Length: 469
Image (tube, rainbow, N blue to C red):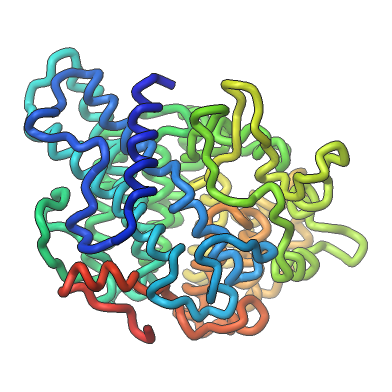
């Protein structure tokens, strides 16, 4: 990685550490701060701006939310970090430190991406920057903005209800914020439209293939398939997920044969559609206590519930929590097994999007459309393989009325502790199907969203709190 990465990352870390007050969203300035005196002047400065967008993802202020929501679901054993208060009981308050940090950090990503895009727009001709590379930078930046907005929407908005007024704040014309201007929340539908617009441009302009810690057209398609599922556009979600799977080999993506090896390869795994770059010693991603994070009570319960029989274990669960290295007693979660190593060695990452998710999107979407044969086939394609260890007879024996539940539970086994998909799946199932999630999965289903931070409300008089807080 270039020296530029270190400089921008260091500045961003300082800015986030110094941010004691959230205030108005409009005061969250992009940290690499492209101004009239510091504009994009050549290819090098354009790439530095894009690196700033990527680096804004590599902060514990985003990554720690995985620990917090895992405490809510029982996905992992509760860890003691800042902001954990109230999560296990689903009684988070609007002054929660973890919520404040996370909300602000996600808007930093949005602002960094928006500022880069604006400065590219201001410079129709940039020396040494080719037309092709310029378009790719736009596509990569728009993917990051879409992903950050999607995370904001599903954590702090009613993402499961397209008719809801409780979306996220989107600055007019997608510009970065300038000045202290109060803005209301967009509706959920408006929020989705903004996210889809960015993803469509990322699909059109991002590199056709890329490193697994950078954005490609296929990564943008994969994220769009997830968005379409959230929007209940089931036929479109399944079709796009199939397109991703069919195009994956040519673009350099495929499933890992060994589940544990997937995470040993970390952000370089061929299965990663997008993961965070992290190497020792200066570009680590210190986002939590993952090495010592044991399986939570609900994850253990689900592993037993989906196991093919009483004498067999779910192979994915065993690979992560049971098949441990006795020479490394401090490592009890094989998804995050790196410790500080020599310069240039891989470190633990944040897995935002994996190819495996496409199979689960297809399986759920087809089941919701009543296409049970297609749903079963998609589930077979991802769990009736050696790394999961199930048989086609196992899937065929699942009653039609239990398919959605089994898809949810196998998806839990696949992605537990990676990106909180299990919580957002529970939210959707509960909101759409009246599927009971308490007390089997969570202690309380009182809140399906997190609160908007109190300090954000104080800085933006147009911003409304979520219902129930």
